[in-house]
Image 1: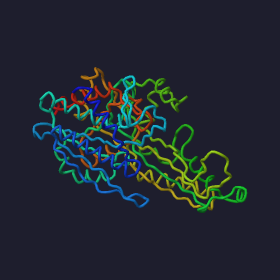
Image 2: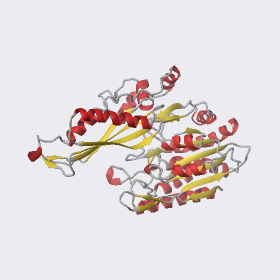
Image 3: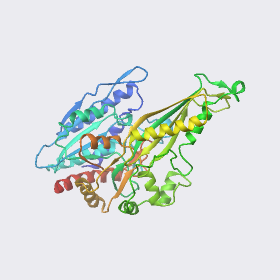
Image 4: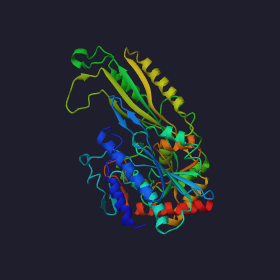
Amino acid sequence: MDPKLGRMTLKEWVAIESDSVQPVPRFRQELFRMMAVAADTLQRLGARVTSVDMGSQQLPDGQSLPIPPVILAELGNDPTKGTVCFYGHLDVQPADQGDGWLTDPYVLTEVDGKLYGRGATDNKGPVLAWINAVSAFRALEQDLPVNIKFIIEGMEEAGSVALEELVEKEKNRFFSGVDYIVISDNLWISQRKPAITYGTRGNSYFTVEVKCRDQDFHSGTFGGILHEPMADLVALLGSLVDSSGHILVPGIYDEVALLTEEEINTYKAIHLDLEEYRNSSRVEKFLFDTKEEILMHLWRYPSLSIHGIEGAFDEPGAKTVIPGQVIGKFSIRLVPHMNVSVVEKQVTRHLEDVFSKRNSSNKMVVSMTLGLHPWIANINDTQYLAAKRAIRTVFGTEPDMIRDGSTIPIAKMFQEIVHKSLVLIPLGAVDDGEHSQNEKINRWNYIEGTKLFAAFFLEMAQLH
């Protein structure tokens, strides 16, 4: 593959403002255009492509927006070969140059070997790297070592709307001949050393609402004679986690998997320069001092984060208001073998206990708005061995075996519905800044990543 050709296509793909987060017709049109461009690219490769109509999405304000199609594509159906299915997404997070981007987020711009643009690393770059790896075999007029399938969506950043129903429906059709599933939608833990990901945390997102009345109060008129909703809420949020990051909800750690000696050794083997990590994060001090403790608290222990308060006064200036109703938002990152519904009960019971002790006349409602399970794989599966071998071939080093502290719901979905072995092979460096301003993928990662996928096909063929 000519690297310029790949970059040109990446430039074209980044130029499409395929934002799925902002529910406005202009971005939906861009999403449909993005999926059409991808379908055309795959057809030109010789793939059999189906664009599945996903219907429409009802929004809380009553409007309805069409959901972009999901692409199902197939290349090769040789029964003697293994079949690898690649999942990717072509929608992106919102981006605006006025928000702190140094360049136009929708114009792929190269500076010092870094390709800046929204979607460059999440996830247009990796999707194209996989396509480029396939096209390299085509260009050389070589037979593909494995059968390839693609499932590509355009709503991942908005929660993969309607995808689960499609995967369930296609379980015994499109996925029936699939042996392995590959996702490349996360990052390495270092800037230069490749990694393979074998687990992700889940997420339970909560709101806790405290209400006195619909209207706000004047603090001069009512201050001192009310149970103030904000005071109740601050006490509730303050009861969830201590200053060392330990979650204070009773029973929350009961189902966390026990730590083994073998697992500790995997953390010891990972290359992580703590000083560089701290500096690049622009944090003065972490809660823990050793590499092993930091990795364990990012990956294999739960964490609780408080995100914000709706209904509070947060503008500049001094407004003497007592909010009549406030909603606190927090989430817990879940790890094996925590259960979403058990966590929901534990959190609700804890907050009800704390609230009852305050003897407040306000009303409190706890809701779990999102519940996503953690995912973990068996690192001795065939495709993990193939990925390790391919990394040795291309990069000349052993990969870091890592987990991801965030949540990739699609991984758990494939594991539970399709029951196939799944591997995450990230291409991007730790500082790529996905979801952030100045998102980028390094030219080196993009090109070597393409080689890695091609080597992976060859290794899969040997091991299969």
